[in-house]
Length: 238
Image (cartoon, rainbow, N blue to C red):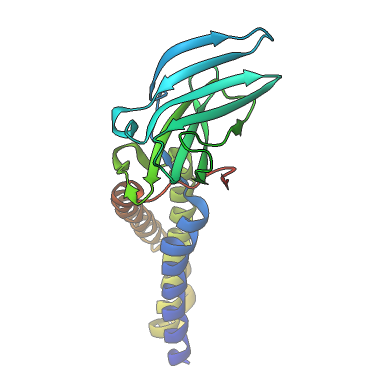
């Protein structure tokens, strides 16, 4: 019977590692941009005869050899973005960080486009909530643009992941203690598991293990989050 519990203990540890360090991060963590305000610089503001408006922006200097300007326009109740690019450019992968009227980021669109009309991208329709945008270029033809300094895992998704992982870690400690009790406790299993004097120690070990898991995950996520491409909400290709 002890051999069975050894197998259960080993299987439990493997399942915990897969869930806590592979499945849960993939499902819960969202990589995005650590932006508190829009990037780029508005250089022109046009009011149109039909009540619309267009704002011309310059992107960050590191992107300007690929995208010299981009236009955020509102016409006929629709908001859209158009980029002016190098005429020799044939492929562009870029993100559009969307901000509301209060300057708060709320989503990111990813666009991967084969340039059909030299010098210009296609028009990208934006959500009505959009008031400001930031353009982040990822690839231009075969050139990769390093955006590590502004990328990371979103805070809300981190907190949710840490909470679920902590609970999973705590219960894994309890289950491991049960397995050890079954292996070594013999007839004293119930005393080993339920004795009041043992409960505080078990709880403290569970809390310490959960805290250690969060600390390790925080270091890992801080380092790896900046190296990962943002998970887009509503991403599409044109």
